[in-house]
Length: 130
Image 1 (cartoon, one colour):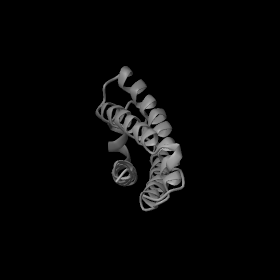
Image 2 (cartoon, rainbow, N blue to C red):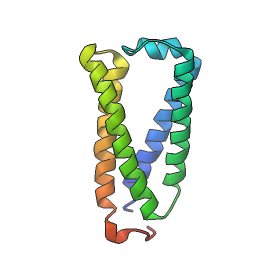
Image 3 (cartoon, helix red, strand yellow):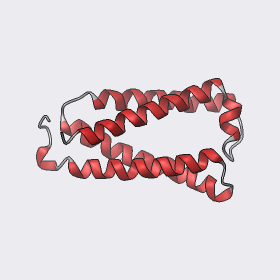
Image 4 (tube, one colour):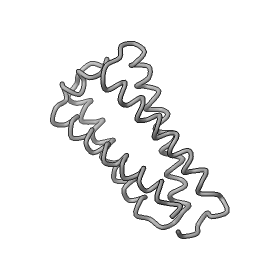
């Protein structure tokens, strides 16, 4: 039961990453228009590939029963969400374009959620299956 919260987060993050990847590949100008950043189809594809790989890693992790794997993923996702959220927050402070606002809030919530999940999967449970 302890793993439900991290599993839901991992699946949700994976789904959002796959949706973002599809948007970056199919509509690169549209995705760039929702930010302060310049449009580049090549750069958008690179971001999409990054999102696809992360979605694969996080969805694989959600299916694992080993708590140490989930704990590591929670810590990684917390750091990643803080880093991505910081970039979007900086963009939001320059100009409140829709994707900066959405992804600042979304990454902030993901960082909080994954941080709490990391702490809830206590070290003494490491390696045990739940």
